[in-house]
Length: 333
Ligand code: TYM
Image (cartoon, rainbow, N blue to C red; front, side, top):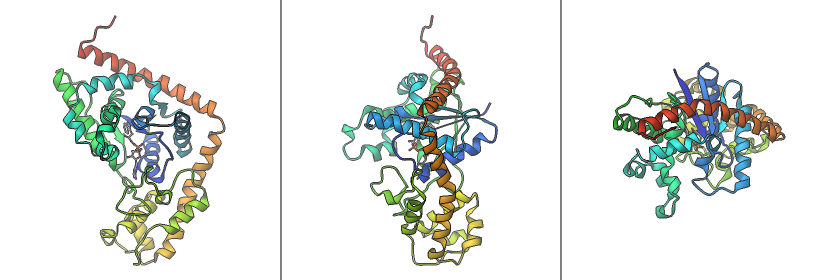
């Protein structure tokens, strides 16, 4: 049976890239009726040091963000990774399946470890094996993510394939990445060649999900553009990264294709388009941030949702882990 799994790190402010590349698409998948499992990956977050109080806050805020975006804890399983120990247990098995060379090729490790890779945590290096465990401990078949996770999902397939081969079984599914739509790679508002990210030192480079309406409008007004009018066809955006990014964002927020957007705004100057984009972004994002803030007034309720989610997640993960242990040759009694 198909099953959707995805995760987001509770490692700071959620931004428009997380919303359009992941959360909004999680909601779309939930509403198709397929079983959906969504995780706050706190164990991944601590691969770089996190302030403990901030980690707790960010985990709850991420859960609030999921719900405010339209995920329904009655329809989707929403839970926190560390509350389901089967993730860590399967990750250890995968640490013994994956090869050093595979991990060394991961561009995210190279980016995050920087020049001094010897000083990176061992967890940061093993990160993709834990991610494979997240997915495969549910036998998930479909994983919606942004474009930056593509390489990790290929590694997940490699781990599943090698495990099945090493033990002569057909046990773990070969998961399909789902990287679709106009916002799989939302770029910085200050530099259309860089990905929008939580780690960019410039707050003006991203729209945070907790930004108020004035901040959103101001950041869009200041977004980098070029002096030309908007084209009326998508190919006119090819060499215009900043313009393309803003059009892609508009399309994703409005649930339109790029062609449809350009049919409406082709020929306009940015001075006219930017206020349209700002109005749309405020209309879509402000209700979410208001609802997030409201939900954060009752963290006991959020903790209850995460607790219930963990119980439901474990009911799926525990038998799959038990079967894995048996395949590997661990005695159980
Ligand atoms: P994370 O927490 O960095 O990002 C969460 C999701 O947001 C997407 N995303 C973007 N999409 C479009 N444009 C952007 N600028 C942008 N920035 C981030 C990411 O692609 C992701 O889908 N390793 C994962 C978390 C993870 C996971 C998993 C995902 C752990 N286990 C299992 C799927 C399945 C990560 O660091 O995402």
